[in-house]
Image (cartoon, rainbow, N blue to C red; front, side):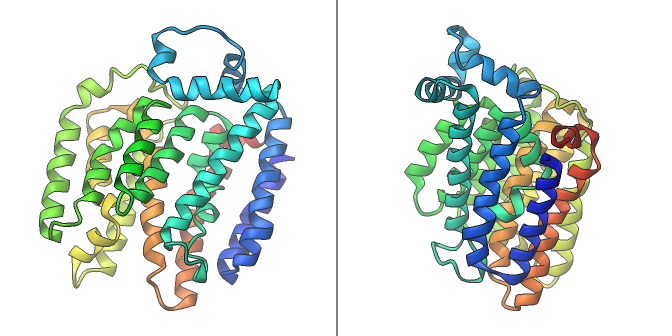
Length: 331
């Protein structure tokens, strides 16, 4: 049932993107997403989700939970309100869906023409999202709030900081994203300076991996995906360099996260930091997707714009149907 509905979501997303229909996005795709989540939750809990459900009515308060207290206390509050594990999860699901919609709205400054606000269309069926709301829920939840923070960093800086702190106390791994926020925020510098700072920030990050690998909350997802993510990011970078070959600086202005991401993932893979590479790779896909989707709003030709968005959705969706680790959650 889940797999069938998942394929329906892919088809709905594709049609909505190609038609650039805000009506379909608002009144068909979003309700379908909510229906899909209902099907998932009422199908039972698997692996990590079962652990999170059990912790909703636990009473332990050791350092592990206090260090990331917003998620653990938030889930227990959801259970206290609903008195049911399934409905508690659904309440939490509704919150992250709203957060992604709001992040999408920021892409177009609340101007919905040309479907500039349709971030959920390209992320909902992506491999990192499926693996997130089906399994590694706490990291996924933190990623969503970090992404919302990222969408606000230019114009609502203090609200962005607040949301990032919230995300950090959901899962400490989001601390690794700080360089991306710095790079996006330093819009007052010229492009050349931003690139230099991006390189320095990336090298500093890679040099600190020894400390980062000691993070307790970074567990393996069960698959070797670090190199796979790196290849995807490199392909995107190469395509960008070809498209903007006459003025490469424009690429780093339009997609500020991509250059840093390639350097960071290269360092993680080279240093064999596999656990971090897998987890951070899944997180970074959401951020580079955000930047790329924002860039598509500047493409004037409707056909090209729709094809680019559809390609962006499919690039990160198709692996879900081929990797056993993700497909098993939809069976």
